[in-house]
Amino acid sequence: MYKIYPKTLFLGQIIQYLPSCQSTNDEASALIAQKDPAEGLLVITDNQTVGRGQRGNQWEAKSGQNLTFSLILKPSFLTASEQFWLNMAISMGVYDAFQPLLGEQLRIKWPNDVYVGNQKLGGILIENTLHGYGIAWSVAGIGLNVNQTDFTFPTATSLQLQAPLPNGYNLPGLLNRLCETLEQRYLHLRAGQRDALKKDYLDVLYRYHQEHTFEADGHSFPGTIVGVDDTGQLAIASQGQVRLFGFKEVSFK
Ligand code: BTN
Image 1 (cartoon, rainbow, N blue to C red):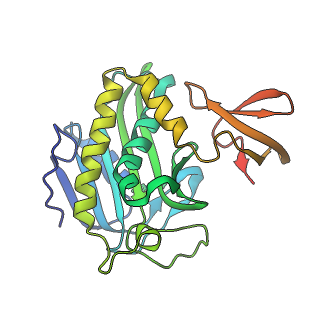
Image 2 (cartoon, rainbow, N blue to C red):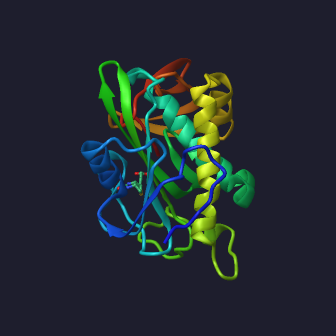
């Protein structure tokens, strides 16, 4: 059960807890389709059986050991082409909650993976329902590896692996904090504080301003991340020019 009392205006004030479900993003989308849910409603499960990730991947999380939840938001202040601002706000909300526990090694890997060193601690899947040029609804799905310590993928890690506690982490306690930091970032975005958000995002961006090998169109090339444009494209300086890449168009080698 998730009885939490976050100090928020709306985010996490209503919680729909499901002991088990296929995907909290799907459950949140079904709520949107059926009725007019309150903004900030949070769907959480202990056991997500068909968790979905970006690029059609699966999100695996052992039952009862991690945080798998989705937030329902109504970012009507963003147009469809401004979706990436929400990705940055949600990424930074997660960052703010975990930074005191993990320190400097915590990073956001473009577009919105949560990394510690070179390993993935969490992922975010935001699915928007557009209405004309605007965004009517957003489902922000967040998966964070907390107490799980063995993973199929060697690149996966967890809070307990990175900063162990004798009895592991209290999941509702972490969720409580996340509701507060996520709402704070969301409210700042809603109030138009975009420059500060972009600056904070770039400050914690994985491999920002570091020479690295990337891959696009089946070719590897050396480059340096120099920014992110307002639509979320990654700007990589390579061989004297800056190239912009959309999601799925470039990968880190
Ligand atoms: C990724 O890195 O590929 C994104 C992973 C997102 C996983 C979360 S877990 C809660 C929510 N429900 C889902 O089915 N996916 C997201």
